[in-house]
Image (cartoon, rainbow, N blue to C red; front, side):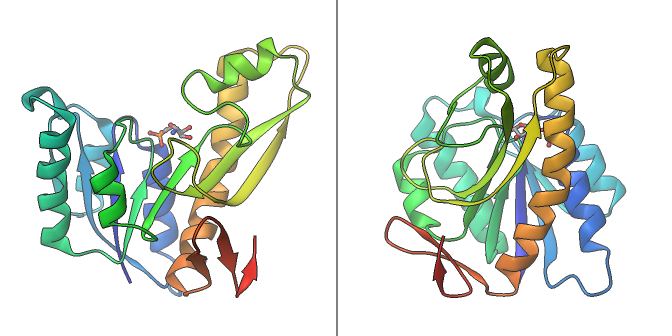
Length: 203
Ligand code: GRF
């Protein structure tokens, strides 16, 4: 299966996927990396790995619909089997999400359904959570609300700041996301009507 990755920032999750895809038995191939920010370090990581890149700059588009249309055109050029959102910080339109239904994965830095949206680490600290973490989920019309496939937990320490917590959460993402993408490429994960399945079992 062919994989297209969308990122906006540093691309540490992208790097973890690039590294995993170099394993001899990795079942998928990264065919392109797209960014909405021309300065994103993710673009350099992709170039280093000889992966084709493209930029669809959201500041150059009048509306979300127009941006998503341009992004969709780039994606369709590569016709990927899987689209991986790896720190892609744009909310996608309903049309976009529907067009790629069942082929669109995201990593969200919280134990969903807790803390959708931004600043998840600070919000988990403020709420006095003992356990925090990250979720890999299918993207559906509902923001950060699609069916969860896998989660990794992180213990919150008394001395934690948002930064230290984020660092440990991201370390878990770098392990978990490549595993889930491997499963997807092996055909083990599917999106049902409003649930995810693993090896034919409801998750
Ligand atoms: C990750 O923590 C991810 O959960 C969130 O944004 C961060 C992206 O980091 N959506 P990176 O660009 O992969 O380094």
